[in-house]
Image (tube, rainbow, N blue to C red; front, side, top):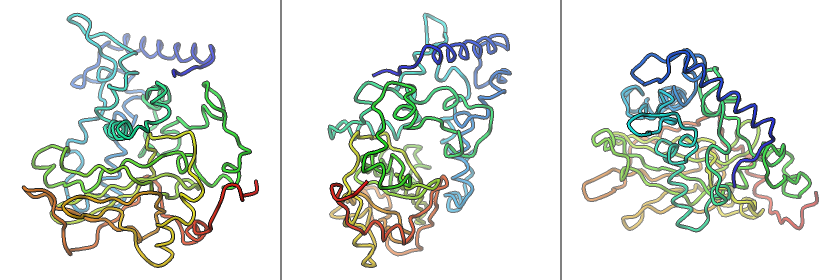
Length: 372
C-alpha cells in the first residue's frame, strides 16, 4: 500500500520540494559534510534531530543519563556517526560516474535502517514469527508516514523527538483525519470509549516492544561492535505514562565496569496489529497480580546459561521491575552478583504508572461485559 493524498496536498509538497532544491542549487549546489552547509541547510536542517542527534546526546549526558556512570562525553562516542550531515547521505545516488539527487533513494527503507537499526531488528523478529507490522506487510515504507519536517526539521531546535511537533506523524493523521486512505477509527467502539481518552493507540496496538538489554559498554568501547554485546528481546510491552496518557514503552539496560543502569522510555515499536489487545491481557494479568501481592517482576533473568524474558504486558511501577545484569566473559555471559542498585532514568518525558492506576488494572474486565 502506498501513501495516497489529495491532488492539492501532493502539489503543495512537490512545490516545497522544488523550492528547497532550487535554494540549495542557488546557494552552492552539492553539500558534503566537510563543506560549510549552504544557507538552505543552515535555515532549518541543521536544527533538525537528524542533523544534531540532540535527543541521543541529551538523554545520555543530562537528565540523569548514562554518562553519570561512564564519564565519557557523547562527542567521544561513535553514536554521533549516524547524524545526517548533508543531503547526500539520504538523497545522493550514483548515476554513471557522478552523484545525482534521488527522491526514491530517500524513500527506500534500506536508506533508513542502517541508522534506525532497532526498527530493522523489529522487522526481522516479527518476520521470523510471522507477525510483521500491518503497515510494513502491506507494502508501506518509512516515508509514507515520516516526511517533510519529520525528516528535515522545521528550523526549531528540539531536545527530543518527544518534544511538541518534533515528530508530526500520528495514527490519527490517517485513521481519523483520513489524510491518506486508511481504515477509519471507530470512536464509538467499546474499546475506544471505555478508557475515556486516557490510553494511547500504541498501548493496545503495539504487539510487543523491541528492547536491547544488557548493553555491555566495556566491550563496546574496546571493540566498537554492538553485535554480540547486548541481548535483543521482543517478548513484552511495558506501559508507562506520557503526555497524560498510558502508552507503550521500552527499557534499555546497560553495564559499565560492573555498574548498572536502566532507562525507561515511551517507545513506539513499529510492530502494529489492527486488532487491539483483549481486556485480560492488561487487566488482572499475572504481572499485575504479583505487584499487588507486593512481589517484583523479573523482566530479564539468566537460567542455564541463557537469558530468559518475561512475556506479556507489564505496568511500570516504581521499584517493581527487576533485571539481571551480566558481565561479558570470553566464554559468554556471567551474572553480576551484588554491587550497587542500578541507576534508573525515565527518558523522553515518560513516568511510571501510579498505585491508583495499578489498582484499576487489577479490576477484571471482559469486553462483552463493558457498557459503552
